[in-house]
Amino acid sequence: MSHPELAVHTEHEPALDRRLWARPALPEYDTALLHTWMHKPHVIPFWAMDWPQDWIRDYLVRQNEDPARSPLLGFVDDMAVGYIEVYDPARDVLGAHAPIRPGDIGAHVLIGDEEHLGRYSVAIGRAVVRFLFKRPGVLRIVGEPDVRNHQFLSLLAFLGFRKQGEIDLPDKRAAFMVCERADFERLSARRRRVSA
Image (cartoon, rainbow, N blue to C red; front, side, top):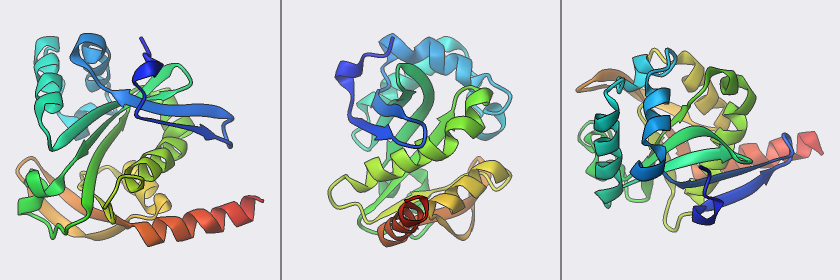
C-alpha cells in the first residue's frame, strides 16, 4: 500500500520521467515488505537485520518512537523501492566515533530489490540528499557505510560525499562519509549545465 497522502517529500525526476516520493515507514503497513528486503542477499551483509518479522515490526515501532530518527519508505511512482532511515548523528553511535558538528544529519539507505539497484540508485540518492538539505539548519549529511560496500561508496562519491577516514563501530569497519551542502550544489549545477 503506497499511501501517497502521507508523503513527506515528492519530486519529479526528469531523467526517469517518474515521481519520487517518501512517506513514514509504518509498522502496520510496512513490516512484511521491510522483512522481505532485509532477507535479500544484497542487503544482509550490510544491514544484518535478517530477523523474524515480529522483530522487524518492533524495530520499526522503536524507530518511529525515537525523536532522533525518521524511518521512511521511498517510492518511484507507486512502487516501493527503498528504505531510508534519517537520524541525528549526535544522538547515534556514530557521534561517539566521528567528528560530528552542529548542522549534521545522517541517513541509512537501502534499495530493496536488486533489479532496482542500478536503475534507481542515482535518482533516489539525489532525491534523498535534496530532501535532507531542505531541512532547516542542515549543513552536512554524514554516513558510515561498511567499507566493504564498494557499490554504495561509489554512489556516495558520485553524489558529492567525501571520505573523511575510516572508523571502527561496534558492528563494522565504516567509512565516515560527509557531503557538504556547497559540494552537492556545485556538482548538481555542473550536471545541469552539461545535460542542458
